[in-house]
Length: 578
Image 1 (cartoon, rainbow, N blue to C red):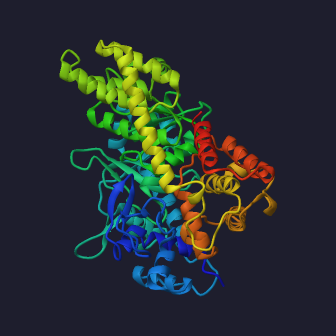
Image 2: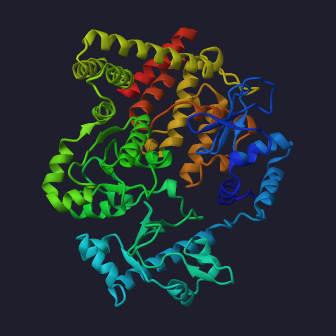
Image 3: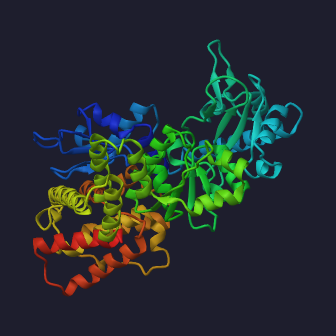
């Protein structure tokens, strides 16, 4: 029987691709989050071999090879699929199952049940004698019992083993408690509770499962906040506190704040779309998660320097997903919770309605860094501000903000506009060279994978787009007439599409590791190359319609020239931005 997807997924998680590849190839960080090195599968002098820790795939822009960690071991060690799985299982101390059962499911179910019981335990200790310190803290922060219940807030007694003993009575083992991140092993044997003397915030995923906890210390000491480490059912970078409730909001936007208390306070004040990123800066995975539930984000971080830096980072991540981003600057208070307590919900709503778009925010932030009364300060601000304005895709926006920058520095609008357009041309030229190098239509719109050739590059480009959207957001295809073999010009792309649709319909994983068992090596190389190209689900429905229109209209169209394909690519990029 085939190896279960769940085992392949766990195998990949316990063999991070960046660690496995680094045992064979020296890797360095060159751009974004990807790592680069010299490809071990063909001779080259300039590194074109890319490893993506976030996607858990590798792809060589030179020879076209790519896939999951399993495919890498198959290629580098010259092993079959099963032997490569055995190789990685030994590396991770795992045993490959002999049947088709999901070996990880019972374990995960136990951890979900344990977290659920732990949440009940913490809540009971909050409302019972002994939880007075946490009750006083909530009263001081003006959190009502109703909203404490809604968020399942609790109290971890200041005891070494109260949770441990309570969970043992429920039938859970010390090993399970440690695996859930609730206890640690002591130096002299046994275990002790990790969360002690803390107000407890259960982290609930979008499916309603308690997956982790965040605890705030009520007395003196460090760390003030403590979060569950990553476990088999929880990854901090893939979850957001409060999203299980915020996803139901009718507001049309999500408010992104720093702290858990901010989330509870905002919900209590009537702003039911607030979420927080669990004590870390927003991650790319969290940004993608947000994009599934909204097209607009309002960032309301703390007013200190750390908050401003975190906001700048979040803007960069969210803007790449083509989300509308606004920034709410809290003045006269350190955070949204303090502002609402001192000024009230109506004042915060007015602040929310007048929040500035992220371009205004970035220009204002740059302005605050320089003394505009000095020539040196003006030059520094102009350099930073014109670079910001040059990134705007809309010509009218560029003109408006160029005029604003010119006014701030008391220089001519013409000079600012000229510099903005110079920077824009340089950026466009750089992006075009990158695009030509990595996609190279028509010649390199042909896949680099050996043995695969596109008969119709124009249609194939759209077919690749359909596959990217299917991986990004399968819900785009719900209720839509399925695509058939006759709609595809490439047999390989149709096979990839069919495999993806079949797995989605069956509720199976689309992870690179799971796909390794279904696609041929050359097809998986093709798929990883497709996923490396830019795509956004922000305007996915329209993009999908465009792609399908190109596929079906391409049958009667003449084969395009290299310039024609390039123009098509540029037009599709502009349409998605619009």
